[in-house]
Length: 391
Image (cartoon, rainbow, N blue to C red; front, side):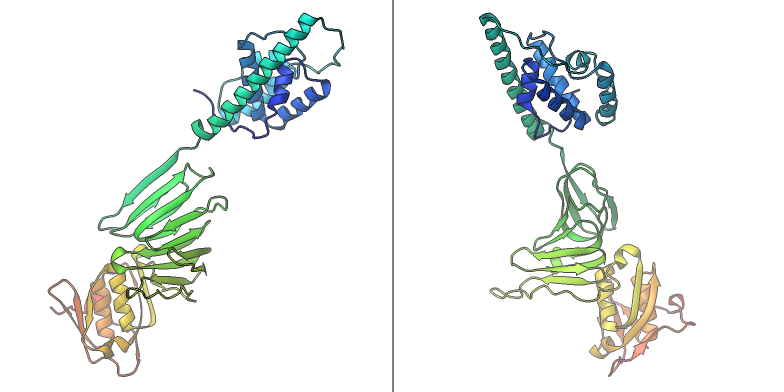
């Protein structure tokens, strides 16, 4: 199998040709030796050119560059990168011992023509090999692009991307990943998201990570953040846990930088011809934006109306309030791995309300509510298990 290795853009093809044609001066041979010693992979290029030259029939001995011990040492350095067997001894034959000062001598006309022929052949061969390396690097040895698609059904899904990043994909979501090889390979890292996902992106400043939705783009190099972009909601919300991200509007020159602990929302236009509100950073993210992923709900002096919206966003649970005043009450409580019914049972007890179920699988809270905001919280003696849910 042909080994793949990087082709230096500054490979000295003309100097290689002069060396093969036995036309290189002592100084030029010293320059070529220095170039080979600068990077073990350069030895592979010199070896390939020398073998091609020998196959062309130009096998006359000429000035040498390296001793057999030098060649073996260079291959020892190159072998871990290529994972190949030791190089054949032909390399040593083309590159041996310390260069000696060339002795100037008069050439007869036939010798001049033979020398010119060797130079022309070497120059043409080096040009051909150089062009071949460039084409191979551009077309044959291009890293394979990866395109992967992930779809979640009724449950969340944990995904490990080829670049080392981790993604929690919420229920009824779709993620399409496009990238070039695993880290630390260079190339694109991009995903197209429909739904909701929590990203923990592997840090790589040379390879920005792009999250695209139908209306927005999020750009990071390594951080943790949540993106909610369900098509039915017609909006995009981004909340940052660690690091920072750039949120950009795709159809308007509008963007905002979000550091850890902040959020921003991009809403679609409300009516034809009406521009959407500009992106604005909010100083504090919703503490429950990750509840769907970490199974924890926290409410600290939160309006009941907000509690209801959080249950809707987290579980898809429909909750109706009998009066607007009930939504003004404020609630404090923490729930770990609890169902919507348990949370609502505690909320009903704390607000002196009656909880019932609706025919569509939702819930309704009935109570007088709070004429003015009043903080309520479950008492230590009250537990979700002891509060019945009235049908």
